[in-house]
Image (cartoon, rainbow, N blue to C red; front, side):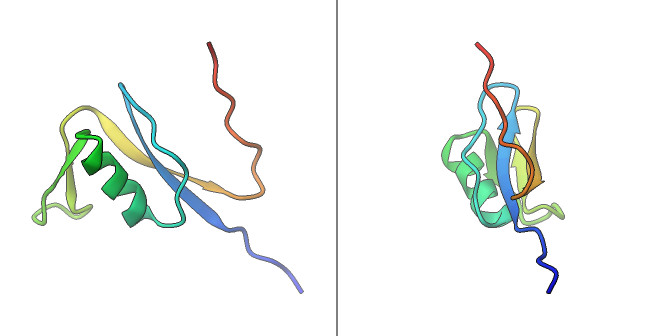
Length: 69
């Protein structure tokens, strides 16, 4: 049986990066709580970034992201 990759999501802006979450919605909510985005139902994504940002996606089998000092 072939396993499908589990997708994980987080927000990333020029200022902050959120934790990996199970859903894109959870990642977007993190961005809103961090004041990096605002709820905006008129946009397809449902949010408006207050700073340049995006929701990142990765498959669980990919190597973890390393932080650089």
